[in-house]
Length: 334
Image (tube, rainbow, N blue to C red; front, side, top):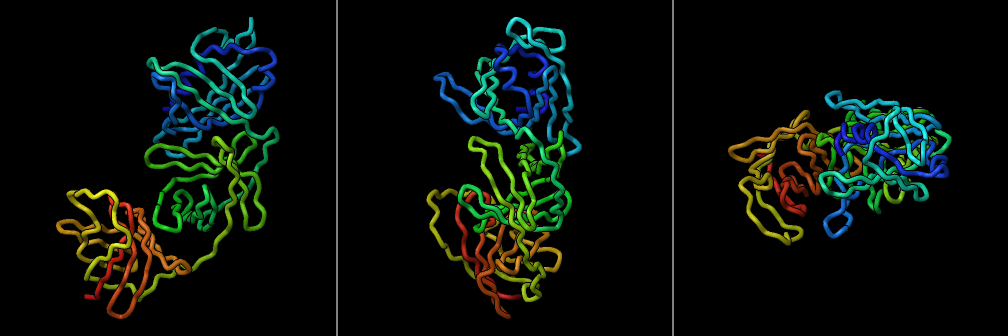
């Protein structure tokens, strides 16, 4: 859903609700996910864009978004409403467009856009908000989500990198925002998708939080200390000797350019450059000593150092955007 769509909808909808429902909607809500329905009335998960915060009081609705990038439009709107003849009247005007349904901790707003039905699902936040003071800048944490251990590196006051133990890496812009007494960790990708995490408590080196999705998942960020001093043994120019396939690709197809066909690596203290004629790809990097891994920031790739000696270097990595599995690259020092 676009950043302006929710505001447009909020200011132009008619809710058919009972007085009993009114008491249920009072409180704070956060946008969770969207379902689109095809012509066979089968629901499909919608694209996740901006997340929206709604606060219902007895006579007003506050609508806010969680923008943290300056080029995105900020939403901050308060609309008065009242009940009349079983309808909610917004700003002294009765308009149409939305139905509402309350199910346990969810509020479902239903509408039709371009002849397609969609449901926007909001989840209710705790009645008593808690303001948490937490600044993770420069710190590393682990968490577990969907059974996968993830590493979260808040490299500065606006960017973090998240990766699993294998190779998937994602960059996010981040900010801790205080909103109506609640504390949120807001994650925003360069592709304009937003993930909002409610911070519930900070206890010593653990941060307890909730992601408001279908299951309202609870996650625990555990502070993780690791040396990031770069190994000077890595510095130099390394020529590719050969590549070993660890696991055969299930789908084979050719691409014009793959960084897995590189010819050599040049590793310096402040950059790693991939040479793949006629192109070169420089990237800043960070070394994680405990895991013996290198994170290429610009490539958003994780490299595992299998073995290093005076004249040879063995890396396990996958620099391609099109191939599935890591390969083992054997280099010799130039």
